[in-house]
Length: 224
Image (tube, rainbow, N blue to C red):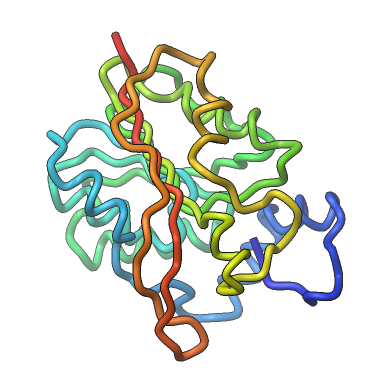
């Protein structure tokens, strides 16, 4: 997802281009650090009480979530469309002394390549992966299919309430989504128990000012 001229409604092609390796490599190369280096608040809230096992972090960015999980005993596979981001994840894992517990790999969520191994992970976590509505179901079904029986899927995203309140631009029609869209997309992948499905608020600094933002938070348990 990327910022654009508020008077310009991006085309489907432009939205898809913003999810490519080329786009994200350029974004990471333009800055020494794009993200804060801290794990996402919702990951900490939702995973801190889970027994560690094998985790898949989809869209790992510079690795803060993967490193937090590895530090709590998880065996983590961290994937991203950007090889620049993956290089940073690997570097940061070495700095945090958890590199033995993190494997990095390229994954293009839009294309679904390379294929995620099914029924392998005890936790599959994906934060702020905003894809066009036309692609949403396919993208999230593939990710959900990587959850092992007895494992969990955690999806966190910007909620449409942020557009309605003026906190964020829309970035494109339907790009921000409520919990119900996740539940609808993955319902046929497996039998799930819904552990969390909510629109949760938190404080965030945007453009130097503190604002209240709303997150979509969905945590599902895949039944055996």
